[in-house]
Amino acid sequence: MKAAVLYKTGEPLVVEDGIQIPDLQPGQVLVKVEYSGICRSQLMEALGSRGSDPHLPHLMGHEGAGKVVDIGNGVQKISKGDPVVLTWIKGEGANCPGAIYNKNGLKINSGGVTTFSNFTVVSENRCVKLPEGIPLDVATLLGCALPTGAGIVMNSIRPSPSNSIAIFGAGGIGLSSIMTAKIFECSTIIAVDIEDSKLKKAKELGATHVINSNNENAVEKIYQITQGKGVDYSIEAAGKAKVIEYAFQSVCDFRGLCIFAGHP
Image 1 (spheres, rainbow, N blue to C red):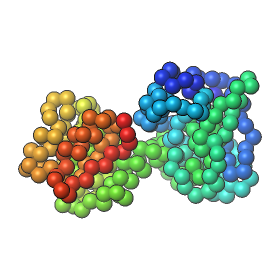
Image 2 (image 1 turned 90 degrees about the vertical axis):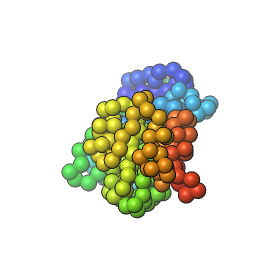
Image 3 (image 1 turned 60 degrees about the vertical axis):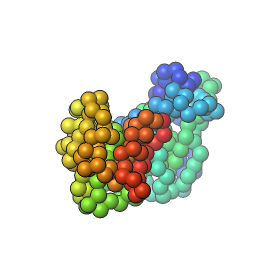
Image 4 (image 1 turned 120 degrees about the vertical axis):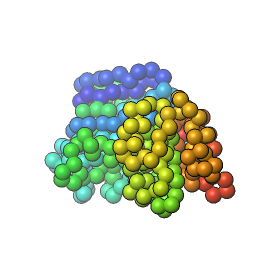
């Protein structure tokens, strides 16, 4: 088995070959990983931005897609050969501790799901059988970016057509929020980013206005678009402390709501 291993925070991951795959325990699933996403939270963890890491060395990655190679005793919702989404979001099935791998006598830890490898042992509740017709590369987005961005709008905000919303950061989470806001028919959907290519994609996916914050003051522009009121809702999806401040400043007084998808 080949995998990217984090030995020390703040240093590059090391790609190791010849890692021994442990025997499956009840409730665990062996998956051949075909695709993996890279979440910003994983970068923060590797950089040590979340403090000391007591689990080193360990594997990483929490969003991906692949095919089931084998299942442990008691696994019921998936079978060998099934295409699956791998996700950090706990679903149905057994909730198992992370597998422990071995490389020449060195123990390598992992969590309930890891995806920076060509094979992975995951907990049953971190696998979701993929419906027919969805390619594995697209399915990877279902592991984190789409449910996070769409979930903020669908579950936390639930806007009405008369509402306005600003999304700061047009990456995977931000674009997912924009698409969902369009489904809810929000009257004003403002995308804020520093890359014109991402803003172009945001426009294609439903943004009514786009702002390049490298070129103009995003908060001032938002108040201009909303005739001095501010937006009803804002979502911070860039993972930066300063941008969180901008997102808070952009909502209207007394009734505005700001939600940020992660922490810096």
